[in-house]
Amino acid sequence: MARAASDTPAADPHIPVLLEAILTAVAPVTGTWLDGTFGAGGYTRGLLSAGADRVIGVDRDPMVFRMAQDWAGDYGDRLILVEGTFSDLDRHAAGVGYPALDGVVLDLGVSSMQLDQAERGFSFMRDGPLDMRMGQSGPSAEDLVNDAPEGALADILFHYGEERAARRIAKAIVRERTETRINSTLQLAGIVEKCLPRAKPGQSHPATRSFQAIRIAVNDEFGQLVDGLKAAERALAPGGALAVVTFHSLEDRIAKRFLQDRASFGGGGSRYAPEASAREPAFTLTPRRAIAPEAEEIARNPRARSAKLRVARRTSSPAADPHADVMGLPRLSEIL
Image (cartoon, rainbow, N blue to C red; front, side, top):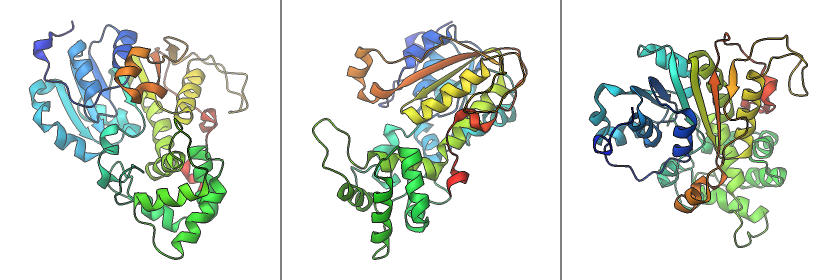
């Protein structure tokens, strides 16, 4: 049963995208859910208010748990927080005593909360160190930009950002770093801007695609997504729901192809993967097509403009490990 508004702590300033659409698509919300991209906790609070018995909040960014200290305790043992990546969500769920989940929600990409923090290095609109690490450990964007070979940089920009001027930008980056180390967001944004025409009114900033590509590479976001979808298949109980919110075509393509493959009976093959033997579907698509935000939501929250929601229900078919080529996109290890 949904809980009364008086039982719910005050809302946070970060507005979760397509939350109402998720709650409608997966209703009734019951049992144990895992929010694999906890962030500011918007989806977690929504699920708890809608009737989830408990939510396991997973995030690779330790800062989000410090920010949640003011309200997380209000939910008592209904909220369990775990620092880690959603690529291991089945292991995280089992580790806190819930190996079979009733639902998993994933909100992909960088959060507005992270973009607003200049010191995190995600934004080309604010000067800060060239970092971009969601987990705040491992090689940074500064390391990648200054140390990667020119060809690898061009591949990252093209494959992960769909940047048509990838080779021109990579060459400019290498030329600049021979003179001085590239270590700030505005420094990198300036290099990219000089390689591209000035943006017209209403167009995105010239550095948008390059920053997206470098962020994806630094955090292995596509590898994390593929592994996370497989982990969700392993962790979900029969009838459990998987809800994935994407914000650009590349990550949506991965989610779409994974779910199409795992909701099929196999066989036949495709240009993305070799022919597979017949099998029972692991998911049913509910609905079959992606859900887009309503105009009213976009007006309230412009971040929702490019969002898509895909929802599927787990069947009782055993989990499997689909061929990586099903997703049709290069992994970081293939281009570096």
